[in-house]
Each structure stands twice: as C-alpha cells, then as structure tokens.
Image (cartoon, rainbow, N blue to C red):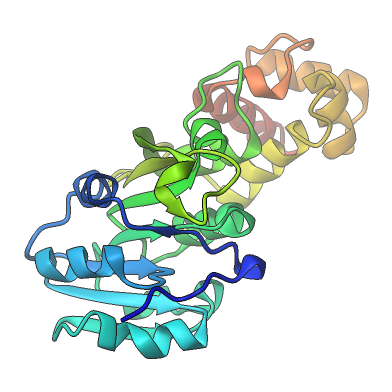
Length: 263
C-alpha cells in the first residue's frame, strides 16, 4: 500500500526509521501484557511494531482517511482504531496503567501533555516524539524551568530519550525531534496538595516571565508588594528570584506559605 500524503494543517511527518521506532517501544517499556494508546498513528509504521509486542493497541487518529486505511495497513487482531480528536477522547475508558506512544505534531504538544497528565485515569509510562526543544523544555532543571516543565514534572518523572534527526521523517520537519520519556508518579510528589491553588500560584509566577517573583506574584495573585514580600519570605525565597529559577520543592514551599496565610 502506498505511503499516504501528509497534511500540513495537521503537522503530519511520517517516521519510518526502524531504530527510532524501536527506541519508542523501549522508552515506554512496551511488553506483552500492556495496553497501549497510540496517538496519531498515521500510516502505521509504529503501530505495526506496537501490535507485535503489546497485548492491545488503541490507535486514535484524527485524519478520517488514515483511520479508515490503518486496519488494512496493519491487519492485527489486537488493534482497535478510533477516528477522533485525541483531546476529545475519553481516557477513562482505558484500563488502569495503560501506556502511551505518540509522534506528536508541535501545535498539539502542550495541550496533549496537559490532558494526559491531568486525567484521573492516567498513563503509567509514555514515549512521546516531540520537537527537541520541547523535550528539553519539559525536562528542564531550575534555572530554565517553565510553566510546562513544572506542570509535567508535578505529575511525572521526565527524561530525554533518543534524538531523531529531521531527515528521518517524510517530509523532513524544520527541526530535529527527541523522544520524551514520562513515568507517572505512583506516589504524588506533594500528597494532599490542592492542585488548583498550587497551579494558580505557579501560573501567577510565570505570568510575567522576565520580571521577578515579587512583581509577577503581586500582579498574578493581586497582592500588595508588602504582602507578596512577606509571602516569599515565609516560603524561604528571595524576592528578586525569577519563576524559572524555582524547583518544584520551592513552589511547594510557596504554596504552603500561601495556604497557611489564607490569602
């Protein structure tokens, strides 16, 4: 069967490199008892490898033509194809402990990471092929943190997998990609935390990225500068610090300081 044309509007780039595809399976530790959610299977190069190794593969494809052709391209009894926008897909219908494998278009990355991490029925492990810059941003350490890295690392342990050069895709994207490995935290990083309040503080901190936390938190939380200075002091954080410099433990300290003050 011919390789289908790509749709630029959907950010489609097909990967057929065996080593890179095998690295995806390794990154998600796919085994014979696993149920795997594949997002955006396209022409099915990764799908074929997943069905050969996993117990079942649920492939969610937005492109109606690709979804229709996939069972013919990968005639496997353990493959179920769902033609749907992954952001609308009911993750609660999957069995607990499912794994995720996906080659994600850039425009979808942040929203998809949020949906996967925040889902009550969450994944156990994931291998997501994303732009190299995005993978590095998700795995960043204090000094280079962003709202995205804090949000993902709050829920999962994130690490960098194999680098996949642009020339291995058809058509080649403008930048290289990298496998982002996620292992969902079996025990919450901060048990008992009010997630809405925690991320209200984090979002306020990153609301004016180039400014100090004194300025960004004051504006984002609508606190006076004196109250914000006191808040930072109770959290053990110097007021001239910027949001990208904080560790998750420091965000938690700030959350505790905010919650106990009942601001």
